[in-house]
Image (cartoon, rainbow over all chains, first blue to last red; front, side, top):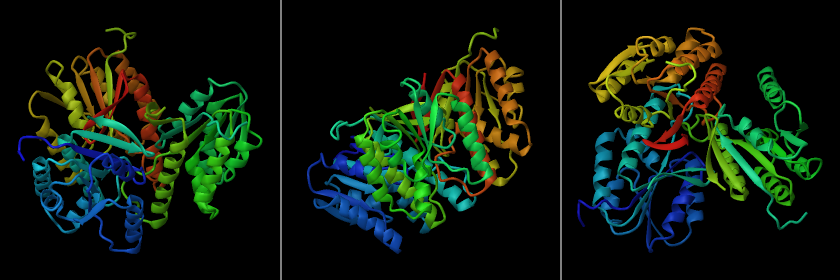
Length: 174
Length: 174
Length: 174
């Protein structure tokens, strides 16, 4: 694998319950098995556990499951390096990084580096969270800023970027 | 009327004060009179009453007014069955259903059934509410989820879906 | 200069940290120097001062700086009348107007009047804030309404409107 060939990277961006995960799974189904599902979610409470189970039930068979709440880069360049990967989702990863007090810019650079070394396709799902009223509390404002910057950073290196609303795609790039 | 012919259904999606209602009314003006306005709003307080009056003043003459805070399906397949209909809006209907503790999936299925039996055109307006920060309280999160799923469900059976921002349409489908 | 020739006006719309300011600056770089930066921000606290400094550092040389928290129209038709102008941003201007208890519709009409008399290009940046859950407090709801109406008003007279997400443009008009 070469550092100089940009791998096919797709960013699927959308709001809550926009159908972005289903859309991303649909893109994966055109790729050869096995598919790697890189989950950033952790079942820390009942609401979260329910959401994870709903997603798993919808996906069905054919998927290898990886849990990577913090170290997506290690999974993408390690165990799942040669598999088509679906990372769901970047925004929860960011939330996990902030909670663990990791250095966001550094972690993002590591992720972008890992992506640049892959040759198997990678589809990343992310939330757009910056289109409402300015949040009251400073932590939510910082999260909103970091999420916007992360989306810009990944979009800049992605080959294809789509924005999903009501389950339908608008092409932003590619 | 046949169950097998999908009627022309348009979904107009957008944010608060995005101009989605005006845009939908513009689409209606190409259709033969009388136009049916299916309002899901109830004037329960002064702020709401003001918004309803602003909308009515802008629409002007040529409209039959139906009030259907909960039972859109009955209106669409009953009194207004043969008229071009504008339903404004689905998101407030959802809010009314949740307040009345109705079964959302069941009501949505009834609505989709009613739409499939119409031959006159129907334009539905809905809010996109999932593009901000995750709300603090569980009820708002549930509403946001249900609104997203409802939009996906209607978009899937719609012939045409547009997303409005600053009064201008982006075509998502059709 | 003639009242009757619509000047080239571009509206760049987007969420927080969507890359809308960078995109607008990129558009300016195709225009002849000097460029006028019409800032509506005031450094009233540390968070705001940091954001302003980040923006200034990114822009670099070649810019004349105007501060116009309230009277954009005076700047656009006065000192900066013959320069390509970047107004960043309309949504903060609205917030300043509301804080100063100015009459929004009147100020907007004055701004639209000033824009119609310019011949040098003008690029205006604005936030889309209406795509989240309805805010709890009445002031935030009023701000959201006014911001949506302002965006519609400017979009209606703009020659070109783009919506930015993750740094990438979707064309709404022009």
